[in-house]
Image (cartoon, rainbow, N blue to C red; front, side, top):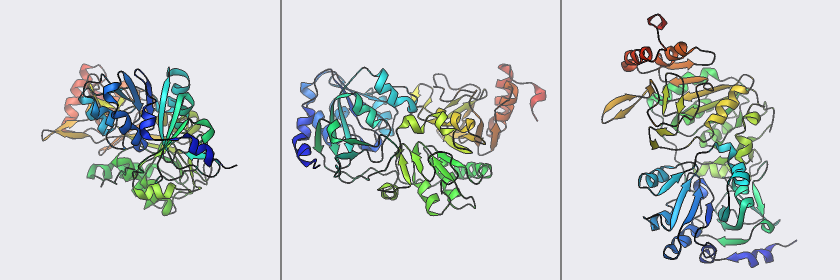
Length: 446
């Protein structure tokens, strides 16, 4: 069957797509570096005639949201994010962006059950193939769930996107959508590799001996997890597998060095499983029509009970602060919101449930504030900080000073273990605070 006639019937301009939005509507953009561009620009041009339009996205990394830039009052457009990017943090600081807390793996279900409505969805996709399918490219995530919920689905085609094979919900058929807009085909925004810091290197070197042949790897966002990936690529380890939320360049380096085969995985054998990929052009080229890649909705990749079906899952994620009880925040510093829960909680739990699995929460022991070091290890989390991973789920806390195992520990054993990986400059102060909190005795310190 030739689907080109149906395509032509549904083809409209970006301005015609924007005209579908009415005052008071909920509008969803696709996510990360696939956020709507042409439709966003066209909608922004309607700023004076629309009021109370509410927009949702996730971690926008495809350039400025023009609807936000057009309206400093938020009377016309109210922008919401399930997980902040650096851009959205800036909008939040200006009172132009609102946060919606989530467990990332639950996001498709939120759309299908909890979100009241999606009036219009603007979703960026690849060109249609001969079978009438468009591909969600490097961002599977909740894309299909958004389309399923929306009253009106508008696909914004970008001819420069990789076509990424999937396990499920990686594509949508032209019969399931309402309109098509041919966008301006901007190149995918790249996340350049950041050179590792000395602390990143030290933490990565501490984790490396904890990883064995056949381990299934998840790497979180940030320089340190990527540093672990770089060391893995140069290691003697073999038959590593991939089940992760985010596919990054480090996985490609490991694959090209022959470290990743996915042969020892219990599920999705011989496949690198992920829900979105962001990195350099090297990553996007690797993903394009590559049978080793399998993108799934985040409800699959981040489900702890799916994660744990593989043996020896190793989850490596960053944190902002850890307190002496073992509570972790990776999304805020006090009342200053930074990112979101993402999949850190789910992979921490899933890795620990895995046979032989290990979950590492990593952070530098200090950060600089006005030229002075400040401890990231706190007696209790900074007032107002969101708990990303509760103390009961944290397995290992890692700084450049060592690895603190927390499972099965009493409160004083936890405090002692965490203080032992804090910066030496702050350890005595942390001991005094632990004493005040009733989780320390002088005999505790080894």
